[in-house]
Amino acid sequence: MATVYYPAIIEKAQDGYGVFFPDLPGCVSHGKTEQEAAENAEEALAGHLIASAEFGDELAAPSPFDSLAHDPEVEEVARILVRAERPGKSMRVNVTLDEGLVAAIDKVATNRSGFLADAARTALREKRV
Image (cartoon, rainbow, N blue to C red):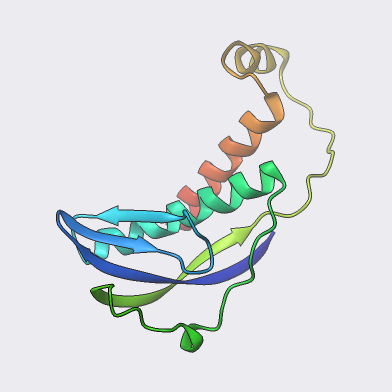
């Protein structure tokens, strides 16, 4: 995975603050405060990049921060750079697990590899905090 920084715009909304990514149509987030909106933007971006990779969608490269035009119809509050890990190609690995753990995973997961990847992402996010 490669680290990328996408520019995002925080705008005033009726019930707080919205966030959108000009380079990634449909990737949006929200928060009751500016800080909550900025924090939620990281999760929205990560989810968008993962979903795009899973569906094989082409991802736009991040625009230079200073090149974004101002839209007069948007009540901008801030512009931020949001960090994410851009998923790479899937690779096959050989992992050894206790058979009981594998059975427990198989009871709740429709896709063992996807389940383990999600668990790893969650654990890695928690380690960064």
